[in-house]
View 1 (spheres, rainbow, N blue to C red):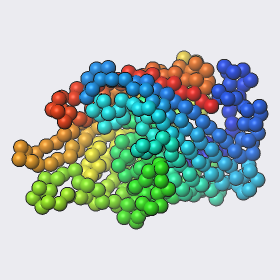
View 2 (tube, rainbow, N blue to C red; view 1 turned 180 degrees about the vertical axis):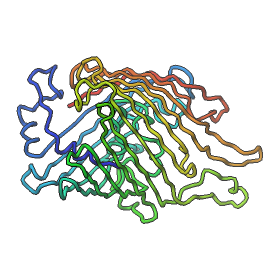
View 3 (cartoon, rainbow, N blue to C red; view 1 turned 135 degrees about the vertical axis):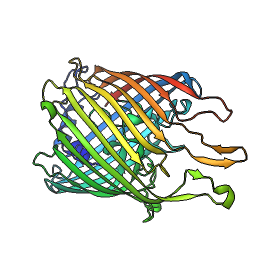
View 4 (spheres, helix red, strand yellow; view 1 turned 90 degrees about the vertical axis):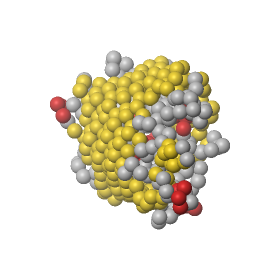
Length: 416
């Protein structure tokens, strides 16, 4: 994973808050000057609450609407600004959700409401997915250790990234699905970050070792094992094609864990569940502005895409591709965003043999999403969304065919 985002979060200056309630950056404002004062002393607090009302209106496994929400509180401490030592930072993230989403209704592997899936904890509302320390030894070299939130820090893309709370709702547009099996969402890890260029935003290279087993509600030490580790590496380069800002990213993962094999044809002969040692994946993503009124402003319209490949067994996502169009302040409204994208997953279906023959319950999956995020104010962002998903599940357990699902949704993000 690429934790360069950690540095951006910790060392960025606090966004100025206007005195005007409707124009300021956050709903709670500057806390009478305390928020800006804390940031100048190395304490930065970010919080948001995202609510969604989303439903399958046609096709899928079943139709129905669901309401849910998620809250996130992240605190970052800059040791230099706190008067301790230079180059250090601590980050702690608290996360919780309530309600539910219609993810089980679609018959798809990729979640249509990613925001509702975090934290991934059964029967528990709150969890701490990230507690980590980062230390810069020079402007170009840093090390980090702790519990990492890999969704936030990995496979970064300008137009399609995150937890389904700010851009696309579908998981397939926020992170490459080939990563999910061997890189848990919240897990222990340690690694190194290299920023070889004078401009730290130009090039970043990271190498990280994480536990292949991890949950947001545990420390992870009890599950830490030398036989269940994943090595990940990413390199991201800023490009200037056609005089417009863009990025290219390449990455890989390799896990030494023993997984259950997707092919169980011999299980009924030997009486033993077949396993498969090791799993690997390769990823690529790009983003490229083709309309950028002011270079480096982060505003404009561009293309993005992802490619992924894995061993195909034990990883069920054998190949992956997505392509889309993204816009930031597309019509001059500073906080508006929009996007339209398509994805395709080539899946290796689990196989097992019974008296009636060989059974393969999954087919390849593809989907489309279109959204527009309206900034009612800089801190209140309303996003209507439509998705059309041809899910991987072919039939329900009652034998009913799972058809292409049409999903409508409305998302409200409040930035505190």
